[in-house]
Image (cartoon, rainbow, N blue to C red):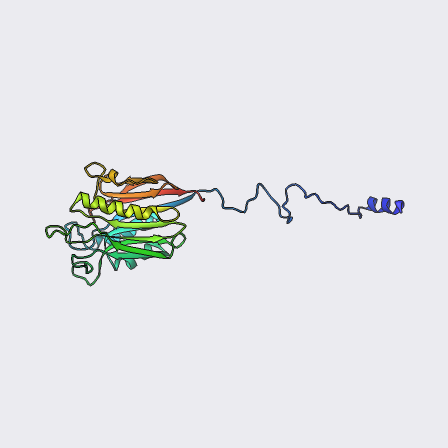
Length: 274
């Protein structure tokens, strides 16, 4: 028998069983080049967000007609945002901007007249208000909209009840708003209302809009800043809040070449999976 074993070993035909896995392979036999994990990777995700006030309602002095739609299309295509907020828009602007945005979930909320009926864009049958759009890779399916309890109902004001809209999901929650331009205290109350709501959303949260509040002033934007969020602005009344599980990488002001009275506000954020 020993001669047979020795002959098989010499010919290389005897297999010695082993219970020790070879280095560099997993238990399934797949080649491994480093540590393995069943959890999410630690690579950061980049999220680009864009805030626009396009003054497209037709009732304000900043109205420049459809020129702003061409400029907005251009800015969206060049910046490629995953989150887009548009204030002072007409309801039909959603579909006009969608080709530039690409596959995305969109939510429109109308501003309201003092009697509660939707505000309309001048000379059209389209409602006037705000748009939030989130690309399909980040968008959830939950939609929330509303008007604020705090409003300027004075007849010498803009006669407009201000609104907000949010698309919420565990992956990313995003909100847009356009706050009162008639009263800083009312704008602050509206801001605090929305940020309280956003603070309760799951996952990373982003809030964009025309807040009609500046950093300086009493009250000012700083009076709205909640715990758990960072903020960037355009140096005037447009601002962007991001929850602390997001980090600002870069913020840029975009010249809208006179098609509206507000610049675009573009920001890059990074998010590390939990």
